[in-house]
Image 1 (cartoon, helix red, strand yellow):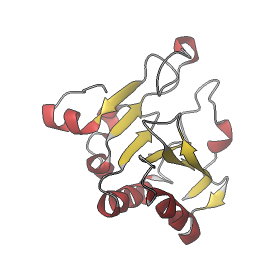
Image 2 (tube, one colour):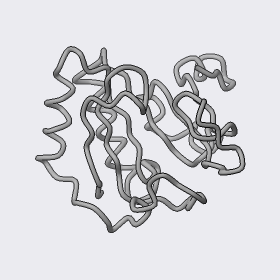
Image 3 (tube, helix red, strand yellow):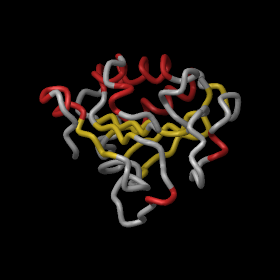
Image 4 (cartoon, helix red, strand yellow):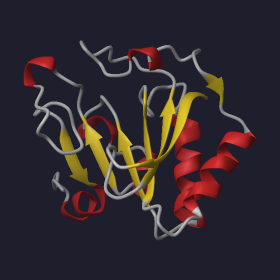
Length: 161
């Protein structure tokens, strides 16, 4: 897996202060995407031990609420295995931290993936410029959903946060 950045103390990509891992690789190609540089799965930097340790170091801080996986698309074939492994480890090592994930995929396309069991919130759906709304919290267009994963898994239908 490759990545572009690890943002610390982020307040825009989820609830509370967060660490954000911006992965490389996206097949959605949304018009007016905020991060088109992240589309190329061969872009950015190789995700190695030092980057993972940097994430864990930040998550140890009491005031950090959790991690957000964004990009690019964490569910891109170049990313899904490594992001799943990371989410599983974070859930085990930092059970009180929340794990959010942004994807252009729909919940219905991902609900059976292993990673889902480690997530707290998913923002699903491609960004649609004609549905852009700067007043929305945690998403860019009105078609996207901020999904409470645990409640959704319990109820069997999508529960919005």
